[in-house]
Length: 148
Image (cartoon, rainbow, N blue to C red; front, side, top):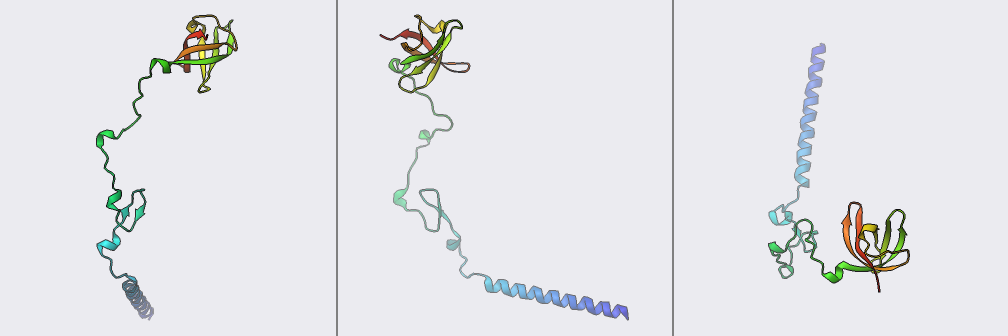
């Protein structure tokens, strides 16, 4: 008798599952939107790179030359002789240790200067002209001369 009760229970579960499956199928059919054609699913990108539902305006189209596109770091242009020579003021100089710092008048950038780069003796607050270069720890001043 216990077997009959379990059989009935299994059959009712199966019928309930079939009914719920049919209900879900009907709900999906009802909720399905009509007109899912290719045009309604299409997305476009406007001139600013944003997604849009309308196609872009052909008058705003830009044509880029492949040779003009730079990938990576742009090449640095060669500096002229006038741009290499800068003027500045000695902010600190230690004659005992043989080094100091020069502050550029235009950019305000500070440059390290070693006694070997001096053509004349300098002291603090002297106005100087110098060339720039790269040292192991940053920008350095080379060929330092007193300004006239």
